[in-house]
Image (cartoon, rainbow, N blue to C red; front, side, top):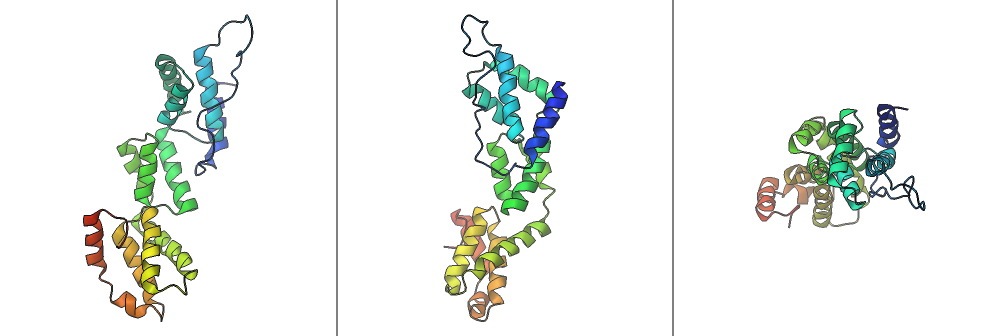
Length: 223
């Protein structure tokens, strides 16, 4: 089996689990040829390839994620770079494809908005331009519809909670998922306005003023 075929198989087998965070990131496991007495020392580049293949079999990874894993395993920079460059050439490492898949998976599975998705991708070493391109696949209408769906679901479990408390809690939940303060507040206000017990409270909310106050304070939701 060629390197390209190995990479495609590894990439495909892991792509459906892109939103799971519990898998090991260090590629731990015994290396072929390790521990043998009197045998030749293990080839560091083969070790690097084995580590990368194990990680890619779990889920797709960015170049930086793999580089960090190789460094933790003591692979020299020269050997790590050679392997990562080769795997990039044959398509086994593709940060652009990773970013697109991450945006789709995490928005669909967790309801994350562009703000949270951008943070997660930056943490995984994806550059700003690639992140921006990937986020274009999530338009404002889709994001707003998801915010409303999340808020509706949360409010259904808060029918006995005072409107002001429900407003703060649900806006805070949306903020943690990366939704902009203005969108989060308008969404929750509009939903509360549809409830007889909360309509008066919702009508009295000045979302623009609250948004300005939130942005000035740097908090994710109303005080």
